Length: 122
Ligand SMILES: [Zn+2]
Ligand SMILES: [Zn+2]
Image (cartoon, rainbow, N blue to C red):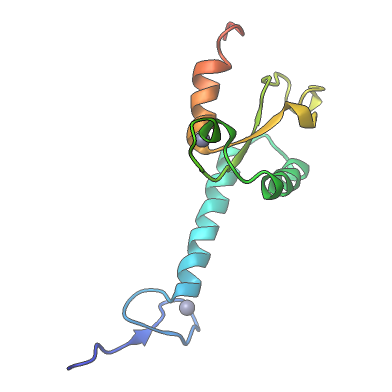
């Protein structure tokens, strides 16, 4: 049985041997960085304090509320403002914990598109 020769992980200075590309560690790190970039782009307008709050909040509320209602267990990635805030962080509703719910990206864009706009005339 010929064994497949292993190569070095393509990450600089990493000595792990892999069949091709990156080792498991660097593959998952790359994924994390990608999430971070996407997250930041999506959160334009939200500052550092919100990001810290968000990561704590999602640690304690890890599942999407709207998916849970449908019986699905989907990891939440955003905090949704149940009542939409109009003036960013200066809006009193922005930091109200009872106005927050964990949602996945899909539900969040669905909600902002289909639900929040109703009755707000935007
Ligand atoms: Zn590596
Ligand atoms: Zn969801």
